Length: 424
Ligand code: ASP
Ligand code: MG
View 1 (tube, helix red, strand yellow):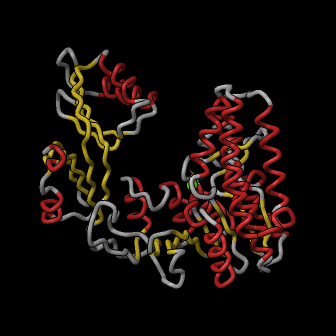
View 2: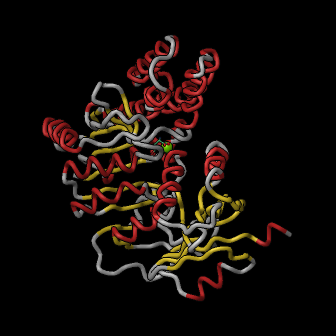
């Protein structure tokens, strides 16, 4: 049994759905196929939530209408005049959403968020499963809201592995072996039966959950890039495709912010030794990148580049040392503000952290910190992480940059810099 995962970009238009069907026909017999919401649907549904939870039904309905029209366009392209005949399940989902939006909002914002945003995945998988059947691939639409059990942490559901394994295994046991099972990434079910989501970009994680529960042979994530590169081509020239990556390196790269794979995805696969392939849906005959239990770690440096970084330095107002008591205060305040620390460093009387700029969270955090610390604040910075660095790569990335802070461990260096090119 193999698990395939297709992200939003792979099914953002009808041609993508056709391409998915071709890939399944040629190499996906009997696979579990996990699909994300089409294109930018999740972002669009977030706007629906904002309007609906804010009590603006008209705006919510209008924004939902755009989401609906986008999917209708794709279905028309796939089925011509046979939309109703082929995609009845999708039309039923649409009707359900419209009923929901006309009722007044109940529950917390996060709870409402999950009920609405999850529709993106429900609809994309209904379209994909129906289209596969039209193309004579026998496909079964499985509802992840009956398979992936989580706690009631809306927007960040924690998986109940035991119950989830039981449900997934018993579903698969009842289905014919050659049949393709199409299911939603990113969504699950709370103990009370409401829908939860697993955190933005969580569909990779769903693929890992299914693979873990089914002891799958492999997971393949189909992407619009040839595989995992040693750097993001948006920022670096001469990128190199990494053919093999150890689980450990993949976890580290994801942790430092490489966006190819969702960080939570690797652990369950590593626990069972299930290989993960990252391959191109544009060139599906190419092998891409394999992530697994390899002996050899990466031989060339990998780069992770983050912009819009903020460096905050804290100095206790009473000139006391930075120690456990004030550090626990600092960490508590960051956690409470929901701000993730990308890098930290301390000296005797100061503590520096680097975070993503986030106008909705950072100002309140600074306010809090200023009550106990003198705060220096430096924005518009870049954070460059190099795994398996050597001095010549460090020197090269520092050309035309001012270095503000550097942290080295045996394999990884992190550099906080200001781009001098921009200032001139
Ligand atoms: N559709 C969800 C999101 O955009 C999940 C995913 O794409 O993995 O966050
Ligand atoms: Mg997505």
